[in-house]
Length: 429
Image 1: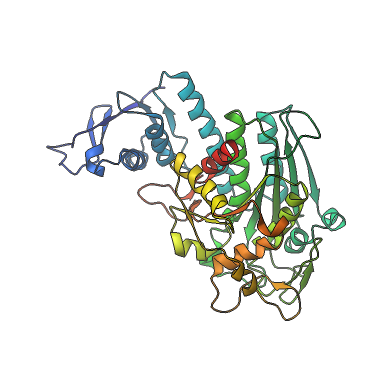
Image 2 (image 1 turned 30 degrees about the vertical axis):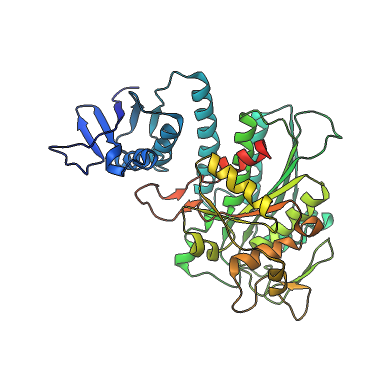
């Protein structure tokens, strides 16, 4: 690297002339991050300092000196990533294992952030599915097999939810079914199934979103990106369990072919759903993935989606929301998040929520009754499509996966928060 800024972590405050509350001070081509200015939280200090250096146009750094452990280096990278700049970082570590882990994290997180930040025109349902499949197969060419079901073939296979949501677009909806089987034994049991919502653009359909709410809806495939990235990181860390991945990919657009309010979707597991809001489309596509995943009879089942605004209201944008009927199952995800320095919080999901999505014409509706808790009833909707009344199943509503405008910690766009949680869940469950 040329014109590289050396970045050091120091325990004390900056002092004169920078001031005792200054996070950064400079000496020529050296920058010092003063942990004391962040009240001892070195991870936040590193991430905030990285954002400030990016804002100053510093395009290449080396993390130098003592004090840089792996989590501090990673926190710096999360803040230093900028979708508009090709910032370069030298981790400054001589530990081979640490460098390998950081490279694996960066590869997975960069893919998640870049595919999610891609334009709606550039990232179609098929492009998303193909990119995920190619990324994972490159990691484990002998262990990954996949196929795609697209367009009218979805109807022939019984995946009516993805087809209904996606039929309003000229670009066909797609389900990716991917099998990571490191044993090579076709009869090997499936340890975990992952299901991801892949709405590559969400206009809201005939329940049309206002422009301000629609502007970030290229990010509505964040669940599909996150489960793919989580699997990628777990594979890079040596995952030796069989995992099946289902991505439910579609564009939710308005046209003469689009599905409408009042339509009834009859799923292959026998559940009939009345559409009362076409902007509650994510749960309709996830239902197909959950049915397929349940048929694989996994030990564990996890789905992830940017599903509800209600979850963001509840936990903000720094936490992902976790739902399960089983406390132990939810705790597995919370523990995984804790071990990976990611934030997650359990929200309520009880059998009573199953009764709060009534329909006058079908078994259930795709939105809750007036006054019902939106994030919990969305999770309850999904439970109708999981084997054994939701046994060993957990749902992640990815409130913390996307930043609509830059702040002190994150650039605008996808954050990748959640992929480490999913990777740890796969490895430790």
